Image 1 (cartoon, one colour):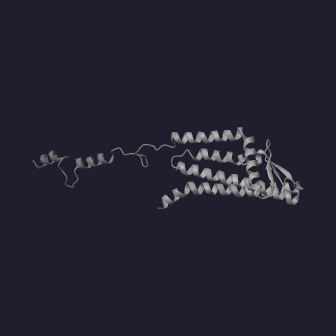
Image 2: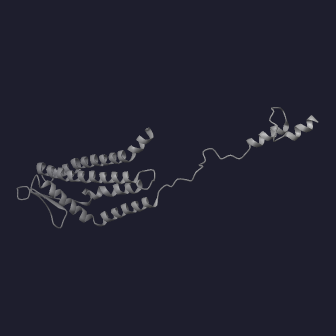
Amino acid sequence: MGSHSYGLQWPGTMHKPGNSPGRHRAVYRRQRLPTKPHGQRTGPVPAITSRPRILVAAALGAVIATILLFQLQCRHAEAAAAAAIYNLITPTLAATKSPIVWFGLGRPGGFGLLITPDCSAAFLLVPLFLLGMGLVLPVRLVLRQVLGALAMAAGVLITGNLLRIGAIAVAMRIAGSDLGYQIGHLVIGSAISVIFISISLVLITIIITGPLIMAKGS
């Protein structure tokens, strides 16, 4: 009779430890319940990018296309800006129809400096905006910070190229149009470009990743 009562109590009310075959089978079934693989995501997969970010990337692509299509006008505007700045130091004038900056007008040894496509700030801005097209897409990066970093980097590159034009002009004034141009263009100008490109990349890195690093540290 006791044996019959023991059988009626399993599996709902029997909780005493023992060597009952039925109880061990119940535990075995509970262990074999299907479980999710280790590391499987339980929520929705986060989006890699968004439509507004794609539109911003497309806008940067349009800016690149505009720079390439109107590179002559960009170089002429750069010559005008350089002339306006350096006219404060020495008589300087930008040509009306060509991207040429004339230094020392009305003085002995005056010369003109042609801004070629590979010496223009546009030559530096195109790779920057190509980089920006990749940086604006990930949702984990703050879009406002990315755009701010690109704007500051563009300003640094333009400033550096204007300084490079002045350095070449000074070298030509001191060492002559031939040797001075070689020294100013290949040595001093290249060094200035490398320095300002490095500064722009450091600024981009600090502005974009700085808040992320601080957030992880806190």
